[in-house]
Length: 131
Image (tube, rainbow, N blue to C red; front, side, top):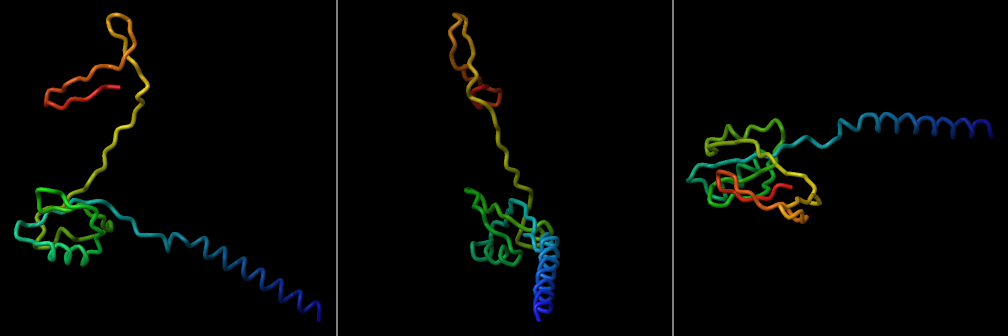
């Protein structure tokens, strides 16, 4: 009786290990679908209700409105076809750009005093500090 009980417990443990290995090995199948950020520009006559309807149809998540335009930033699946909609004027990628750097660098002025580097003005009129 004890041999049968040990065999059944052992078979349950081995079966559980095999099933867990199969499930863990196939987690990529259950992974979240890949998305991308896009800017969607609608025709001038498209209202908020119609925009919402189009975004829901394509399972797009609205991130934000772009002020002063009839456009929104959305997160959509890679294989979306939102650009095929008749009320959509333009769809393009929304790239997130960031600059990383250290603010610990100091510049020496003519009197050999260490100070922050002065701001520069680039030809198109944007003032910034080089670090």
